[in-house]
Length: 255
Image 1 (tube, one colour):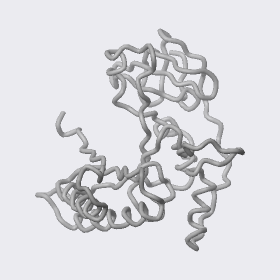
Image 2 (cartoon, one colour):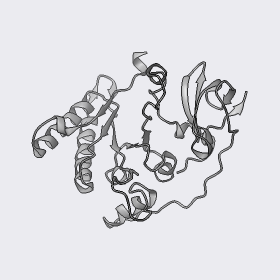
Image 3 (cartoon, helix red, strand yellow):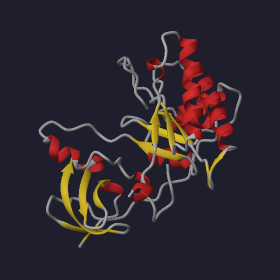
Protein backbone atom coordinates (compact mmCIF):
# COMPACT_ATOMS: atom_id res chain seq x y z
CA UNK A 1 0.00 0.00 0.00
CA UNK A 2 2.76 2.44 0.98
CA UNK A 3 4.50 1.95 -2.34
CA UNK A 4 1.48 3.30 -4.23
CA UNK A 5 1.18 6.55 -2.27
CA UNK A 6 2.20 9.93 -3.72
CA UNK A 7 3.58 12.91 -1.80
CA UNK A 8 1.96 16.27 -2.64
CA UNK A 9 3.10 19.62 -1.24
CA UNK A 10 0.84 22.70 -1.56
CA UNK A 11 2.68 25.95 -0.95
CA UNK A 12 1.65 28.94 1.19
CA UNK A 13 4.48 31.43 1.61
CA UNK A 14 2.42 33.62 3.99
CA UNK A 15 2.90 30.99 6.70
CA UNK A 16 6.70 31.12 6.44
CA UNK A 17 7.63 34.71 7.31
CA UNK A 18 6.25 38.21 7.92
CA UNK A 19 7.88 40.19 5.08
CA UNK A 20 7.70 39.37 1.38
CA UNK A 21 11.43 38.95 0.60
CA UNK A 22 11.79 36.49 3.50
CA UNK A 23 8.64 34.65 2.45
CA UNK A 24 9.94 34.17 -1.06
CA UNK A 25 13.37 33.03 0.13
CA UNK A 26 11.93 30.57 2.64
CA UNK A 27 9.42 29.22 0.11
CA UNK A 28 12.16 28.47 -2.43
CA UNK A 29 14.15 26.74 0.31
CA UNK A 30 11.10 24.62 1.17
CA UNK A 31 10.53 23.75 -2.49
CA UNK A 32 14.15 22.68 -2.90
CA UNK A 33 13.95 20.66 0.34
CA UNK A 34 10.77 18.91 -0.81
CA UNK A 35 12.30 18.11 -4.19
CA UNK A 36 15.43 16.66 -2.61
CA UNK A 37 13.21 14.52 -0.35
CA UNK A 38 11.47 13.04 -3.39
CA UNK A 39 8.06 14.73 -3.10
CA UNK A 40 6.13 13.79 -6.27
CA UNK A 41 4.18 17.00 -6.84
CA UNK A 42 4.58 20.58 -5.61
CA UNK A 43 1.59 22.84 -6.24
CA UNK A 44 2.60 26.51 -6.35
CA UNK A 45 -0.54 28.01 -4.84
CA UNK A 46 0.26 31.69 -4.29
CA UNK A 47 -3.05 33.13 -5.45
CA UNK A 48 -2.44 36.69 -4.23
CA UNK A 49 0.57 37.34 -6.48
CA UNK A 50 0.23 39.47 -9.64
CA UNK A 51 0.99 37.62 -12.86
CA UNK A 52 4.54 39.00 -13.30
CA UNK A 53 5.53 38.15 -9.73
CA UNK A 54 3.97 34.70 -9.96
CA UNK A 55 5.83 34.03 -13.21
CA UNK A 56 9.13 35.15 -11.65
CA UNK A 57 8.61 32.99 -8.56
CA UNK A 58 7.60 30.01 -10.70
CA UNK A 59 10.80 30.30 -12.77
CA UNK A 60 12.89 30.26 -9.61
CA UNK A 61 10.94 27.26 -8.32
CA UNK A 62 11.54 25.37 -11.58
CA UNK A 63 15.29 26.09 -11.31
CA UNK A 64 15.34 24.90 -7.68
CA UNK A 65 13.59 21.64 -8.61
CA UNK A 66 15.85 21.01 -11.60
CA UNK A 67 18.89 21.50 -9.39
CA UNK A 68 17.50 18.98 -6.91
CA UNK A 69 16.85 16.47 -9.73
CA UNK A 70 20.58 16.20 -10.28
CA UNK A 71 20.74 14.45 -6.93
CA UNK A 72 19.63 10.88 -6.31
CA UNK A 73 18.39 9.07 -3.21
CA UNK A 74 19.72 5.53 -3.32
CA UNK A 75 18.80 4.10 -6.72
CA UNK A 76 15.76 6.34 -7.13
CA UNK A 77 16.11 9.29 -9.47
CA UNK A 78 14.27 12.33 -8.17
CA UNK A 79 11.40 13.44 -10.42
CA UNK A 80 9.39 16.16 -8.66
CA UNK A 81 6.81 17.93 -10.87
CA UNK A 82 5.90 21.57 -10.24
CA UNK A 83 2.20 22.35 -10.79
CA UNK A 84 1.13 25.98 -11.13
CA UNK A 85 -2.18 26.72 -9.48
CA UNK A 86 -4.86 27.69 -12.02
CA UNK A 87 -2.53 29.53 -14.44
CA UNK A 88 -1.93 27.39 -17.52
CA UNK A 89 -0.29 30.35 -19.26
CA UNK A 90 2.32 30.77 -16.53
CA UNK A 91 2.92 27.02 -16.33
CA UNK A 92 3.63 26.86 -20.07
CA UNK A 93 5.82 29.98 -19.98
CA UNK A 94 8.13 28.69 -17.23
CA UNK A 95 8.11 25.07 -18.49
CA UNK A 96 6.59 23.73 -15.27
CA UNK A 97 5.52 20.11 -14.88
CA UNK A 98 1.82 20.87 -15.15
CA UNK A 99 -1.13 22.86 -13.89
CA UNK A 100 -3.78 22.39 -11.19
CA UNK A 101 -7.16 23.69 -12.38
CA UNK A 102 -9.95 25.16 -10.30
CA UNK A 103 -13.48 23.97 -10.97
CA UNK A 104 -14.24 27.27 -12.78
CA UNK A 105 -11.05 27.30 -14.90
CA UNK A 106 -10.56 26.31 -18.51
CA UNK A 107 -11.37 22.60 -18.82
CA UNK A 108 -8.74 19.88 -18.62
CA UNK A 109 -9.70 18.80 -22.12
CA UNK A 110 -8.95 22.26 -23.52
CA UNK A 111 -5.56 22.30 -21.81
CA UNK A 112 -4.79 18.98 -23.50
CA UNK A 113 -5.11 20.60 -26.92
CA UNK A 114 -2.00 22.65 -26.22
CA UNK A 115 -0.11 20.62 -23.62
CA UNK A 116 -0.22 16.87 -24.16
CA UNK A 117 2.71 16.03 -21.84
CA UNK A 118 1.91 18.29 -18.88
CA UNK A 119 0.29 16.99 -15.70
CA UNK A 120 -3.28 18.31 -15.41
CA UNK A 121 -4.94 18.15 -12.00
CA UNK A 122 -8.51 19.24 -11.26
CA UNK A 123 -10.12 20.31 -8.01
CA UNK A 124 -12.58 17.96 -6.33
CA UNK A 125 -15.87 19.65 -5.42
CA UNK A 126 -16.86 20.63 -1.90
CA UNK A 127 -19.50 18.72 0.03
CA UNK A 128 -22.91 19.50 -1.51
CA UNK A 129 -25.73 20.68 0.72
CA UNK A 130 -27.72 17.75 2.03
CA UNK A 131 -24.87 15.24 1.71
CA UNK A 132 -23.84 13.61 4.98
CA UNK A 133 -20.14 13.86 5.97
CA UNK A 134 -19.86 10.06 5.86
CA UNK A 135 -21.23 9.83 2.33
CA UNK A 136 -19.04 12.72 1.16
CA UNK A 137 -15.87 11.37 2.80
CA UNK A 138 -16.23 8.21 0.73
CA UNK A 139 -15.64 10.06 -2.55
CA UNK A 140 -13.67 13.28 -1.91
CA UNK A 141 -10.33 11.66 -2.70
CA UNK A 142 -10.64 11.99 -6.44
CA UNK A 143 -10.98 14.70 -9.08
CA UNK A 144 -13.04 14.55 -12.26
CA UNK A 145 -11.30 12.09 -14.57
CA UNK A 146 -11.41 14.04 -17.83
CA UNK A 147 -8.07 12.60 -18.97
CA UNK A 148 -9.03 8.96 -18.37
CA UNK A 149 -12.35 9.41 -20.14
CA UNK A 150 -10.72 10.66 -23.35
CA UNK A 151 -8.38 7.66 -23.58
CA UNK A 152 -10.08 6.05 -26.57
CA UNK A 153 -10.20 9.23 -28.63
CA UNK A 154 -7.68 12.00 -29.28
CA UNK A 155 -6.66 14.18 -26.32
CA UNK A 156 -8.39 17.54 -26.67
CA UNK A 157 -8.54 20.36 -25.44
CA UNK A 158 -10.55 30.63 -15.62
CA UNK A 159 -10.65 31.46 -12.84
CA UNK A 160 -13.29 34.10 -13.32
CA UNK A 161 -12.75 37.56 -11.94
CA UNK A 162 -14.28 38.27 -8.55
CA UNK A 163 -15.59 41.59 -9.87
CA UNK A 164 -18.79 41.38 -11.89
CA UNK A 165 -17.99 42.28 -15.51
CA UNK A 166 -20.11 44.90 -17.23
CA UNK A 167 -20.02 42.89 -20.46
CA UNK A 168 -19.36 39.23 -21.30
CA UNK A 169 -15.65 38.45 -21.23
CA UNK A 170 -13.37 35.48 -21.75
CA UNK A 171 -12.09 33.74 -18.60
CA UNK A 172 -8.51 34.87 -17.97
CA UNK A 173 -7.39 31.24 -18.16
CA UNK A 174 -9.05 30.54 -21.51
CA UNK A 175 -7.05 29.17 -24.45
CA UNK A 176 -7.39 32.57 -26.19
CA UNK A 177 -6.01 34.44 -23.19
CA UNK A 178 -3.11 32.01 -22.93
CA UNK A 179 -2.19 33.10 -26.45
CA UNK A 180 -2.52 36.76 -25.43
CA UNK A 181 -0.24 36.13 -22.44
CA UNK A 182 2.53 34.85 -24.72
CA UNK A 183 1.96 37.65 -27.24
CA UNK A 184 2.47 40.25 -24.49
CA UNK A 185 5.93 38.73 -23.96
CA UNK A 186 6.81 38.76 -27.65
CA UNK A 187 6.36 35.00 -28.06
CA UNK A 188 4.26 33.09 -30.57
CA UNK A 189 1.53 30.74 -29.39
CA UNK A 190 -0.74 29.02 -31.88
CA UNK A 191 -4.28 28.32 -30.72
CA UNK A 192 -5.17 24.78 -31.89
CA UNK A 193 -7.95 24.62 -34.45
CA UNK A 194 -8.35 20.85 -34.76
CA UNK A 195 -12.00 19.79 -34.45
CA UNK A 196 -12.88 17.60 -31.50
CA UNK A 197 -14.35 14.19 -32.03
CA UNK A 198 -17.73 13.75 -30.43
CA UNK A 199 -17.45 11.43 -27.41
CA UNK A 200 -19.42 8.21 -27.54
CA UNK A 201 -21.44 6.38 -24.92
CA UNK A 202 -24.92 6.36 -23.44
CA UNK A 203 -26.29 9.04 -21.11
CA UNK A 204 -29.11 9.47 -18.63
CA UNK A 205 -27.92 6.88 -16.08
CA UNK A 206 -29.59 6.83 -12.67
CA UNK A 207 -28.54 5.50 -9.24
CA UNK A 208 -28.78 1.73 -9.04
CA UNK A 209 -28.25 1.08 -12.75
CA UNK A 210 -25.52 -1.33 -13.90
CA UNK A 211 -22.99 0.16 -16.34
CA UNK A 212 -19.79 -0.84 -18.14
CA UNK A 213 -16.72 1.42 -18.51
CA UNK A 214 -13.91 0.68 -21.05
CA UNK A 215 -11.23 0.95 -18.34
CA UNK A 216 -12.93 0.08 -15.03
CA UNK A 217 -15.30 -2.64 -16.22
CA UNK A 218 -18.75 -3.19 -14.75
CA UNK A 219 -20.08 -1.07 -11.91
CA UNK A 220 -23.19 0.39 -10.29
CA UNK A 221 -24.27 4.04 -10.45
CA UNK A 222 -24.10 5.46 -6.92
CA UNK A 223 -24.95 9.14 -7.40
CA UNK A 224 -26.01 11.52 -10.17
CA UNK A 225 -25.32 15.28 -10.07
CA UNK A 226 -26.82 17.68 -12.61
CA UNK A 227 -28.29 17.12 -16.04
CA UNK A 228 -27.38 17.67 -19.67
CA UNK A 229 -23.85 18.55 -20.77
CA UNK A 230 -22.65 19.16 -17.20
CA UNK A 231 -24.01 15.95 -15.64
CA UNK A 232 -21.61 13.99 -13.43
CA UNK A 233 -22.16 10.52 -12.05
CA UNK A 234 -20.42 8.56 -9.33
CA UNK A 235 -20.01 4.85 -10.06
CA UNK A 236 -18.97 2.06 -7.68
CA UNK A 237 -16.59 -0.33 -9.44
CA UNK A 238 -15.81 -3.58 -7.57
CA UNK A 239 -12.09 -3.49 -8.45
CA UNK A 240 -11.48 0.27 -8.48
CA UNK A 241 -13.86 1.75 -5.90
CA UNK A 242 -15.84 4.96 -6.37
CA UNK A 243 -15.14 7.00 -9.49
CA UNK A 244 -16.73 10.33 -10.34
CA UNK A 245 -17.16 10.74 -14.09
CA UNK A 246 -18.29 13.53 -16.38
CA UNK A 247 -21.11 11.62 -18.09
CA UNK A 248 -20.57 13.24 -21.48
CA UNK A 249 -17.04 11.80 -21.70
CA UNK A 250 -17.43 8.64 -19.65
CA UNK A 251 -18.10 6.29 -22.59
CA UNK A 252 -20.46 4.25 -20.42
CA UNK A 253 -22.74 1.51 -21.72
CA UNK A 254 -25.51 -0.37 -19.97
CA UNK A 255 -24.22 -3.63 -18.49
